[in-house]
Image (cartoon, rainbow, N blue to C red):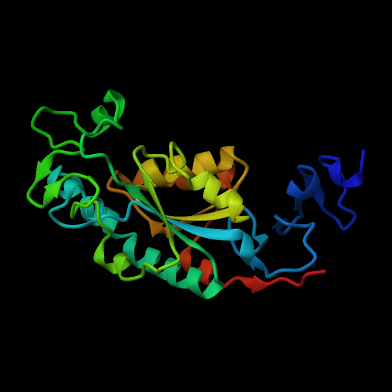
Length: 269
């Protein structure tokens, strides 16, 4: 077996090989190198938990999930449902910082959001039940004061003003109709065809749409990085705490917008 295909093999410089071939990572005592086969590019070291990691900036993207009026704005669906929309708004400053940092890094920004069919035929009963637990509760597609909930073209489905102002002409837009941003969308194809293998995640709700997207990224062998201050939820605090625990223990890495904005240069070989 070739040396670079020996899983858990010695890297020759004090590390342990995770995976094989060009997809391998190298684990060291003080960091994880996600692209050890790289001999050029724009390598950077990001401070994170459980360990800092090294990646090529050209292989990274920022995904901003569901920062829409229906979740984050007063008078939106979350607010009208009696949930704490201000909890979701807590993600806005960090998400703004993350988008601005991604621009400086030259990373693609991917906007992922609910845009449902007007006839709702893309939604099955289990998904409809997730958001309508009472007969008098407005569900997806039903009318509120500002229009139908999470329907393409509606006020509720639009990005909040603070982030709408940051959308660029070359950004990628991914419309979804489940919590998971990969399910039934072109997200995976976009990432693979553009050579993107590490996904930084911002948005709401961190314990629903963000976490399921992060899990699926992990299942598909992407490196997934949760930005804690750029994510939020209208759920109780323990829900976000559980996501952060699993994000750093199982699904990838955890950092924040400040550390995302200031990685350290890493010398290429």
